[in-house]
Amino acid sequence: MSEVGASTADAGEADRAEQAAASGGGVICLVERDGATIAEASLRALTFAASLAGPLVSVTAVVPPRSGTGMAEPDTEVIAAVLAANGATDVCLVRPADLSAYAPVAWARSLEQLTETGGASAVVAAATDHGSEVLAHLGAMAGLPVAANCVSAESSGPGSWQLVRQRWAGSVLEDAVLEASRALLTVAADALPPSAAPGGESLADGAGHRPTVRVVTPALSEADLRVRATEAAEQSSGMSLATARVVVGGGRGVGGPDGFATLEELADLLGGIVGVSRVVTSQGWRPHRQQVGQTGTKISPELYLACGISGAIQHMAGCMSARHIVAVNTDADAPIIAHAEYAVIGDLNEVIPALIEAIRARAS
Amino acid sequence: MDILVCVKRVPMVGGKVLVTADGQDLDTRMSGFTVSPHEECAIEEAVQITEREGGTVTVLTLGPPEAADQLRDMLAVGAHRGVLLETDGREWGPVATAAAIVAAVGELGHTPFPLILAGNESADTGGYQVGIRVAHALGRPCLTGVKRLELAGDTIRAAREYRGVHELFEVALPAVVTVREGINLPRYPSLPGRLRAKRAEITVLRPQWQADGLRKQGLRVPVGSARRAQVLGHGTAAVPALIDVLGDLGVLPPAVRSGGDGAAA
Image (cartoon, rainbow over all chains, first blue to last red; front, side):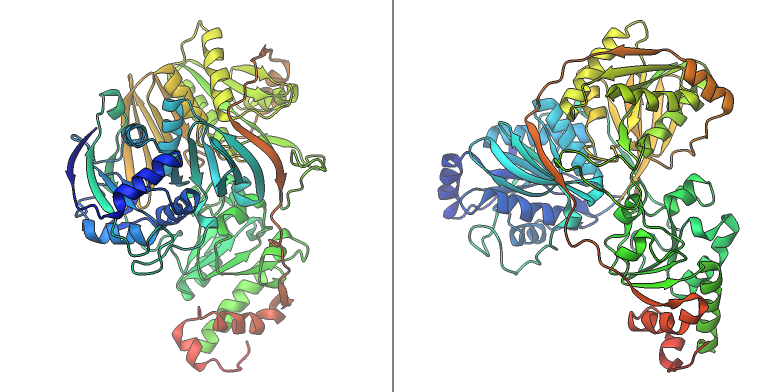
């Protein structure tokens, strides 16, 4: 790995490196871009990494390239400030020679080379698709286990960590012990507190510290580049389920493919979008892209109005980030009632048309 | 083409999960077992490929003797051959599971399985690793999270979505591919399929368990996750109260918000 450019290091840098060496190496965190900014999940993972590292150890945020789709390269100063506010002491921009798109093995190879040169004790990534994939490759290359979906981790001695991690997408927690020469952890970012804005109180050593920014070029073989993405912007067909402010959910209680027109009408009135449960997509009533759940889309709307949905674990895993859940269900004992804030006990095929009529009557 | 599909036996959870008294497993006395959703789609994809292009589908799982039930479920929807990597019921981590699969691929030797399919992640542990670890051990490329798969000769083209971007991949066989639900709509078993599955012989191998550095101490259900909804009423009589709630949450159309004081439907 070659360092192409190194910018200013402040006076504390040498001290920190010494302390890091004494306490068994720093912590490295993979950071993903989201357009011109840093992905929120990665900022939460970075905060997690900083608390795992403790005050004396370096926390290196590793930023791989992201071509996006013709996205401009974000301002390094801005990135560094955001990362520092969330606990980074060092920032490492990875610029492979022949690569701008996502390439999971190449990213993992870059992390491997950084952990070896820096002697890192732990590598952390958000448990996103990219984060999980890259850490699995790193684990396979290094012959190390990966503890997936962690919600907390603390060192319990050299080469030993006490962990809590999610199972069943968060419906069950596992207490576990990891013993390895290096901890590889993915972090269930949804379960962690929101990230800090730049200028806020930093969790890392020395709030307001300006991180060292390095640019590194990893040594990549042809095999590392075999899997690489060609990216294309998604066809935007209006509102997305993942970001909608209101989601009107329909489940088995809708009764068949024809019942969804009413829910669509209500969603339109409320400026929202329709989501469905897994039974609806496996029956072929609606396309899978409308599924909310562990194997579908995870939503975080202001309101989730769940109609005729029992509230299986698989479904709740996709909507637990909704700010408010209101359920319409014939069964007062359905599991969804235990997750909702408000409930109407009744048949959605009567309640929803009456609701639409009432909203229209008031609007006119 | 001869395709290997790896599936995992997991509890069929409904609305509530319970942990056994010793805290080591989910209480499955009231539920059955199934394979993870993404893997049902992996089987369907493999069956469709062999229906189109010929070849066989071998379904493999690692688990206790009862996991043969899940193999038979997959044989009933079109897989041709079942392989059980039988365990003593202990939990196997991704490192040990991948090593056992790689060893089995060697032992089942006469077919090199140019395509190995799996689910992207299991429903229970969500580890995201077994397919990738198998690929590394076999020196193959691995495509993950695939929602569209095309085969053209020795080339695989695959697509998935991530953060609003379509990611397209192209690799040469042999390869490992992990898929996601939505890639297809799995079929239901036919009666002849069920009968064939019932009679089918299952190859049993007994791999050696190995520790991988990650040790489960116990499972628990998070506390305080359950509350109870405030019931606004029954049937259409609840609509005025429901509108008030929607108004408080600020999701009603502007015209309703400004003019809707007290009026009931």
